[in-house]
Image (tube, rainbow, N blue to C red; front, side, top):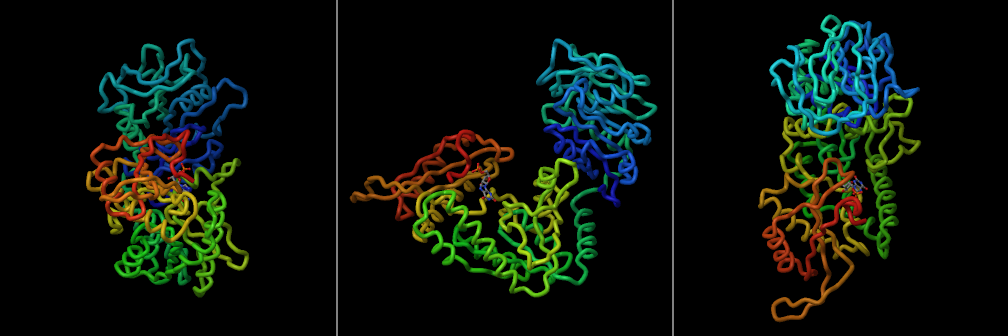
Length: 516
Ligand code: XMP
């Protein structure tokens, strides 16, 4: 824990939905930040060398028996603390203040009034818009604390104990609706904690290269390259550290987008000069999928075959000691065991499943401290082309779950052409970056059409584009009619097997992003 080379701010997680955002905001100040369970001991914090602590918000009420409490010795470490929402309340209560649930609760946008000059509000307007979401409020300050900000409904919206460098705010500075929230976090991190702001992608690369070299020594690393952002960036970083000791395996399952396999081989094999093992498994996959239309059966077949193919290729490589994965920080946090320790189990959706018992590899996860947008910034710094860095997500089972009904080479080729046209038109209209994911599905339905002077009876396709933060929920994208029109007309003119195009306007829920 904690980055020994860089000043670190620890975010103690009391169960807030925004803990990751707090860490993100700190990192935007070029200071390293890590989320730790609230159960961390004061001793562990001292040993970590952290420069400051932020208590996150949380869903509990401090007055509920059994609600989360940090180690009380944390208050004697001599480290600055910023309590946010529940964090403020728990700190106030433990240090001798009082918290109650008032009749008037506050949710949503509020305006604070800065009542007393405080280092926390340096450069912040006297009246500032913030985001509130709380039931409880501090009603009596702990000894040593003074009020620095208030709202009409909440007299102790901001508090400080200057001597001990303890601060508390009832609102959420980390969300965008708190207009000057980032400034407040920056004040805490840089001015109160005095943290050095030297954590950036350049320094991350140098540190990682050094630690990968140290860990790997003269041994060899295997990585499953999918062509997605995470595995591509992990490959570039490890390649920079250990060069030809890295072997990338790329499995062409025949379910990839148009020209995908060629461009991965060209970029990584030729341009970046990496050792790339290309497994052409198209026929194996397509023959296993012959006659199968049930979505779950398709997914199972594709997943199982992928694992088999990947390990078959892996066994061809000599002396592998490490398996590299592009695991990201949110994955690490989400997979933490209930007892609090981060676990490093192999994620099932990484498509490599559990390791077979005859392969005893150690995991190498060089991106496990980074958020997605940081991985993109890293990719840019390592020379990954923008087209790949900012690419929409693509599911592991690929076009297999977009080719509704039976998956055949012919239908896949049709779908590849449709997808390529749709994406090209979106890019030409400058909309690609505004969309979380754009996809096309080929339906096992035929309709009558008239093309030229001829009556046709061909398949129907759907186009779908959604906006989303995290793929958990999604809204259909209000695609301009002229873009839809160009895509539809090109698809009917250029793709032989199709004569009708639909646009999917289902949000998630109730629909999922993928059709299968
Ligand atoms: P759904 O369809 O569940 O998809 O709304 C949510 C997000 O996950 C992607 N997805 C997958 N990604 N392996 C993956 O790596 C899979 O099996 C898989 N299934 C869905 C989907 O594209 C969307 O971004």
